[in-house]
Amino acid sequence: MKILLMAQHYAPEEVSGAVLATELAEGLVARGYQVTFVTCAPSYPLGKVFSGYQNNLYAIENRNGVKVIRIWSYITASKNFWARILNYATFSIMALLGGCMAQSPDVIFSYSPPLPLGLAAWLLSRLQRVPWVLRIEDLYPDAAIATGVLCNRVAIAFFAYMEKFLYRQATHISVISDGFRRNLLAKGIPPEKISVTPVWADPDIICPLPKENDFRLKHSLLGKFVVLYAGNLGITSALEDVIAAAALLCDQQEIVFLLVGEGGKKDALIQQAREIKQVIFLPFQPRSSVAEMLSAADISLVTLNAESSSYSLPSKVFNIMASGRPLLTVTPAGSEVAQLLELAQCGCNIPPDSPDELAEKIVELSSMPDLLIAWGENARAYLLTRFSRQVCLDLYESMLIRAAV
Image (cartoon, rainbow, N blue to C red; front, side, top):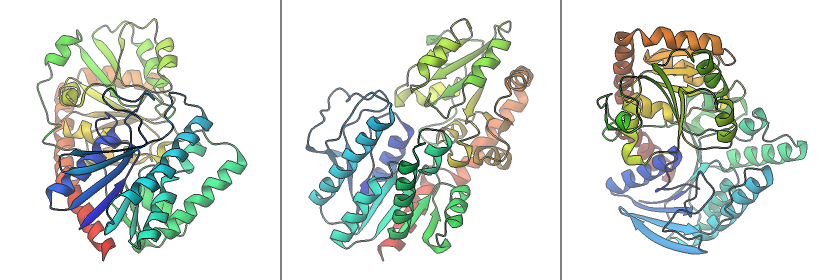
């Protein structure tokens, strides 16, 4: 079977979405499928094309058996609304042309966001008369409205109409969680049209390693109680609570807050933490060092503000679980993340806007190493049975075969 995948991010970018898309494509190739991937030049998160790549009109490469078609798009470091729209629009239009240059597939699989890419995938499926599966990893425009990124009424109406149109036209829809499925059911999408195909982590790549490792040594963390956040430092991250909690613990020198990543809020967070010695910022780390970085944590953070918690299930959750480390989440009690934590018994949750409670919990957990070890073991065990790469690839493969029939 020939499969055409379409997504804005593909390796070598260190963003989780790119890693998962890469692992899906290469996993399908390993199972005997012919996979073509339409994407653009790698540039996330800094908005600059990676060294060794050019933002060419059209380029082809082969990565581990996957035919990768890279097309031109408008790439910028600007985070303003219209720059982002132009980036999404140019990529989506050019992705249609890139798809037309590919060998006619048996099924098309496209990612959202960006939402406009669905229009390109839909039109391509009509032109080539093949089924199309729409993959929803963030609920747009809901998430953009909730976080205040999208507030123009005309734009909201336009993207809401686009969302409904794409849901109607897709042959099948893949979502990351039961919460996302409920959202689509409430919008009138038939249940038989929706499959829950979770995000995963590869437990053979992200695995438990010694805590006192070279990563700790390199960053002067030996003997410290390390509270780690690794991911996007963006509008939904709610890291202000974490820095406020760190400020309350300025006399607890053995507790270190390590924030690893990039994003639109990084400069503001650095400014907020400028006088707090225990807060350390690092850029995104190479994929090859992620397992060691995650294992260097005593506990790992996942934070979401109240507005975005209903529309997001960060993939970092599953990497943390694969690393065998416990989670400390900052989300509303009913969020997808909080529910997963309760099911897996792998950590605890603190509501947003509660830095005092967060600080108290960190101090409490720093004196409970046996509990943290148990939570970490529970996390990895739960991932192995439900969210490992091979378990999830089985679900994807079955879904794509059904859609292609």
